[in-house]
Length: 316
Image 1: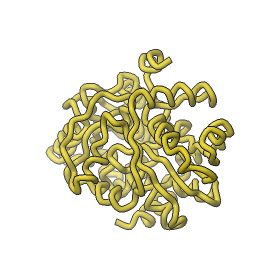
Image 2: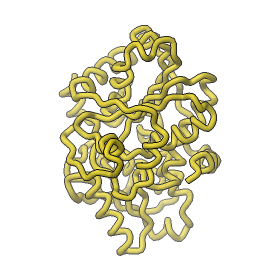
Image 3: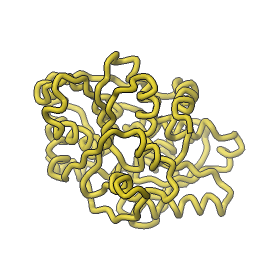
Image 4: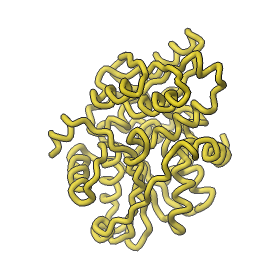
């Protein structure tokens, strides 16, 4: 897979439909880290998440006949909402399979955007396998949350914007679940800034991709409950993101639930904007780097803002 080509094609395809999100310099976190810290505000993207980039690119890549038949996807929430939003541009229909423990707020967002929600399984990987088989059995297009070249290419359009917004980028912290976001960003950004360091960030309670890379193969591991529901769950056994993450990410960081909660509270207090658990994972991981950040231009991808009121109340 040539990520750069996929990203360039996605950029041309989806640009009229998405927001170029702000790259926000943070004096507070810069002083805290001894570095120049910038936040890429994907929490302000359509549907409140970067996911709309990949889903929209995939939907636009389908033929009119494929869209008219309807599509199937699996999601813990954000990708499902992004797919529903994208289908809505064509008045097309879709089925979104979600795991039993999916955030109620995110499920409601999918339904508000017009897609049908069906529950299956207790883990994202189980839900994905079922959704893919359902699509195959019913001759419907399947849109993976991460295991798809067009989805990865769409997420990589974030890097196209970053390259225009900041001349020198030393480190980028990216939440890591299935690996679509980090694959797209790293693949494109390293083609322009070969020396940039890409850090994959996961909650300690669900670090399937990190443990799989350590083991040299995709593992079937359980995930514990986490505030970072957007990165939770397993990885498809044949996912193309495994090799991409292995080859493109320079390092990995895990954070505890306590650290995620503290970063959520701190960011919202200082910057007066809503973020979700997976965004706080990248921020918490950045702060753990300490003196390694000194003097560097550091970008933290704030990947989403979709947190339920119940969860937010508990954190506050």
